[in-house]
Length: 380
Image (cartoon, rainbow, N blue to C red; front, side, top):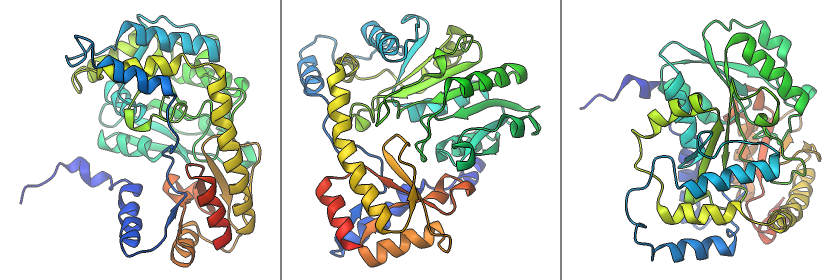
């Protein structure tokens, strides 16, 4: 039998890929599963986005290969979006790179800057892809612990105590997934100073900027950030376009050009129609964000009720697409979610998939209808 590459032995199949097989099997057996585990928006994109992609089919170049750097007007829309919502000025020509999803961007960035044996600072708890991509490239993940005592933000003093000699990249993710914690300008300033001191590339993964968050913040809004910083963002959550695979990377030309060398060897450009739809999304009025968050606000209140009935604790100041909940002390995360799945046909996410610091926590998604959440409350 053909042997797989050694790098595959360092990673496992993605948790949701495995767990959803179990959930779907239960559904096939007639179990009425309510899924509050996945952060896949169930709402529609703005209507003008759908119209734009439909209209794009008529363009003479719609079905041709597209530029690796995206349409100039898409880059202009991204630059304008960052100026309007984050007060960040970037050159649409040299400091913006559209991506076919920000998750793919994590791989592009890692391939551009990591050699075998390099090290990467990764938040614990944090998005599992940071770890899996690091391992696939045969680099070393070094986890930095986050906890509620520090509002799930990095402790600079603890970071300084680590061996940083091989560290090339540090991943940030604010607003933070899974906890919903928000960074401040002061925290970003300290992290940028830390990155410059140790010559580390600091990357903020920022796809939850506008979900139940009245003060969106970009790492690039901090003066002097561009020399050592990049920022990823996405249309997946903000505009309900997860399946469209539209992301963006922003930063200085030299850093982006290194990423482009990888990207241009891995895809052949984003479909023209999706780019046209993305432009319309980025030009949405502020009323879009108001209406979107009205829906999530209603859902979150119901999830808070569900979490309270389960005797869990949560932070009402957290933002994002999830509710991060602390379990009663006698429960383990995976034990708890299996109990809910077996006894109440309710699927939520164990905190442990995000790292050891997630033990004792679970995550509830807001990507379910109010009717489904009300039914979940009734079941428990």
